[in-house]
Image 1 (cartoon, rainbow, N blue to C red):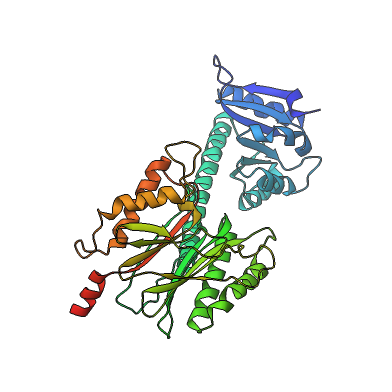
Image 2 (cartoon, rainbow, N blue to C red; image 1 turned 90 degrees about the vertical axis):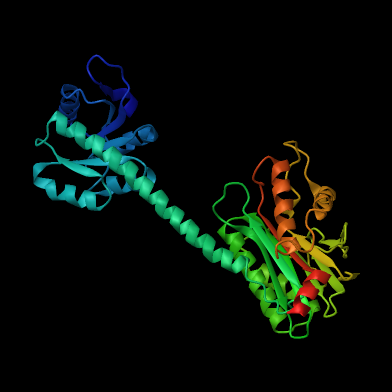
Length: 413
């Protein structure tokens, strides 16, 4: 026999069957009839079904809001039925029914997660209806509190991960400017695996990195933190650039929780004369050089991402920067947005067009704000506008630059 075979209605007199869906799990026919009659006499706004055991109740639990649970069922002992309900249908409010001799079990049930308990024979219809209503409201309140608590945990986790993924640059050269932006994709509360960092070595070289661990969530973010910390440690230790990417690959393959995961990475190392740089790419979009009124890609050998293949060497490419320049590094979330709500992706060429169109609006000096800070905001806002709102993927953007205005300002000081 199933719960559907013994469905009961206890709706207000003269009304329809709409009301709080309640499931009575009670094997004693006399007690079941009493509960139903009490609710009917009190004109309680509920619709009720009955099951004689927990096993009989399981198929219909997804359609109820409150369960009236007898602790003396044929297929449960003690609080085992309550524990099963709390584990498998935690969203359902539970009111425990006990006998007079087992009233202490009701108190134990509330301590174990039930919303309330009632002693059989000591309840009337109005009290029963009120207890059901309060139990449902209490469960809803508990769910709201749980969600708020979870949101606080997510926020704290975001803060910790953000500190690891998005650190403060370690650059002592006042001739250089560093601008960064990070935006989570869509409406997600958790950070993804996008990261960046900038570190100036004791030899005068300035190294910048932007990376992206495929996927989203705390595991991917933690991998991004591992890679960024390992990268910064090696740069500060003065290790040769030729050692950094192979070491990061070893760290990544050891720490990743799925063999299919990979990470892309772009590294730019600016020479002490600040007019030349070396670019390394591991499956990552190429950086862009902004010089004067022009924006061009900085080419580098095509190399696989970290975690793909057995690559042990990531050759780089020497590039000329000139005297007035900015290098823009970014994750693919920036260029994979849609164009005018279509299925077409933005792409690098359109990104270059967007940057070029804004260069005349961002002179070197404007109220003391570095040009790249304003340029990044204009660029990201335009990309979001073309996408019709928030981008689907996370994006991390880093711009490192030098200009005559910056140098003149430093010299004047």
